[in-house]
Image (cartoon, rainbow, N blue to C red; front, side, top):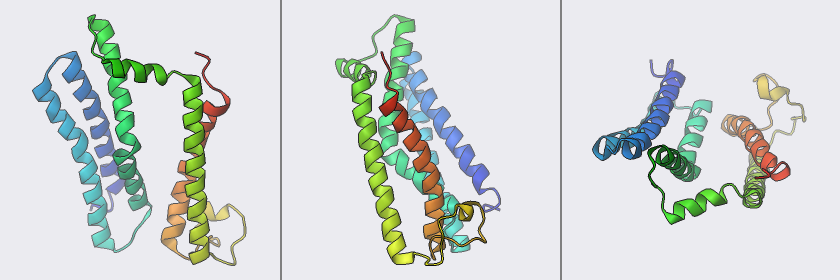
Length: 204
């Protein structure tokens, strides 16, 4: 049953996590309900643990690592790394928004500095160049290492393999191929975002 509804459960947990994060900030700073907001902070973290448990349980049942496990792994990795800084950014922006409407200052000097820096086009350009270069290097290293270990000598540079499982795959390892498929999508989206900041910086 878990296998049939794995994506539904995963998406539901992600929605619960996002809504809980928003409710945590609104309740803590908008209504000053610190005790209740702490509950939603826990509810924000709990789905992450449940996602990891779900992926592990399905692996125990099937004995296979699929695209689902890769996606869950990426979400967990994001939440534990870049997700922390993104949550802090959201927290600062919502505190600023709530404070302006209540006529209160809910931000520290450090918060004001970070908010100003996030609007600096030169800072955003430099950060985007760094992340784009870092992601490209790591992605390239992954392809190089996987090709050296699992490279399919019969593979041609046709993208038919991406949507057709019966076509000749780039790697002899199904897991490596699944990771590559997901990573290509993530890399394209991430690159488009970074390149937009690099070549079309805000003029504010």
